[in-house]
Length: 454
Image 1: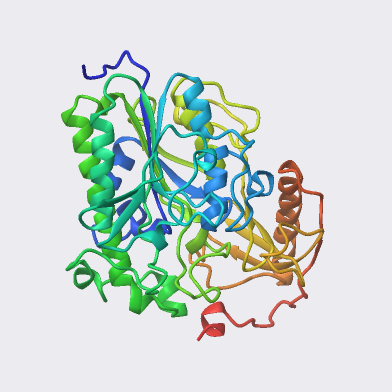
Image 2: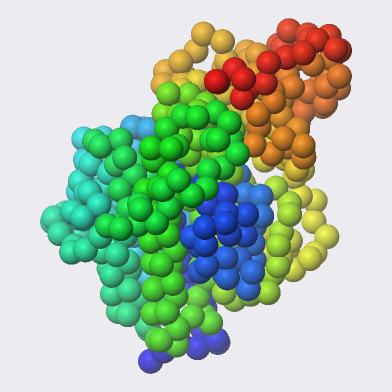
């Protein structure tokens, strides 16, 4: 029988990979790529300024599965599997009587497991149709994942569509007991062996050359080669969101299902370093995020700073389940209900692989530091950092002018430095020494990032 409003809600995470926040209409994209997401954000709750706590695939996933920062999960760079003693959202939902399912990219098992993942490394999920490194076991029109028995499953169609078909089959077969389903798409991540963003046939031509975000227009990178395909992948993802929502509606389950749409990080298209992410700039760390369903319908736009680690406790809270002590974020439901709450004024970001770095993002400012002489693939943190950048996001939302070292902004940097150190300590790190950037006197012009990258 179809579930009713009196039942505990189903919970679905619709998780994309490497999706910029400004790919959505509610954030000003003019290409009408995301009408389903935009409607979800307007009719549900739009978490307007959501920031990842780690702009790298595996670490971000470890944070979202556990509600912990990556330095505490231990998966602070790609290739470090999620510790098997950690409890994930799957464990907590299962303890609350939920069926749990995972469909898509995992990226939290040992690297020796490119496709099939042994049961002990699946994070506690009951139903399993996934691939550890989906970018290596599939292509745009060659979708292969692995089932509970570690058997290869070839799914027909464009990869997004094939995966969505599997999602709809899962939903259709789980109408009796409440379920928690995590759907992890690889799109709009680049296809590694091609260094390309392969959309469905005909979609690249729709969007090539039509609109370039201001940071990419100023800084160049690979955007002119890749944006057409990237936008096309996002369009198909949004169509998949619509298909899934339609299936829930047709089964009488939509009004009793919480749906979270978010991603792990964005893409700066080789403008800030030699690849697509692994920096604390807005293009990498700001996430398109909305929630709809019981508790969130009509929630409006939330303007507080939301972190990726706030989303797991939010989902458990929405299901009426206790929030475990291990989770370092907090539920956004009090904000949705417009309750008085002492909410952090900044989001905290850790970065690895390209560098060892830390940053805080407030409504107005972005302040970041980097560890000298420490490679991000060898060290999770440092006891010493130097200031790297300061951006005034009110006047420079695409971060084209670095104000770090300007005498006129020394006070702002000092305030943000203190906030960053406090957040690092709260996350279990030792209080570091942060050295000031070289001082730039008033009136001395500094080269803008647009000029520096030209």
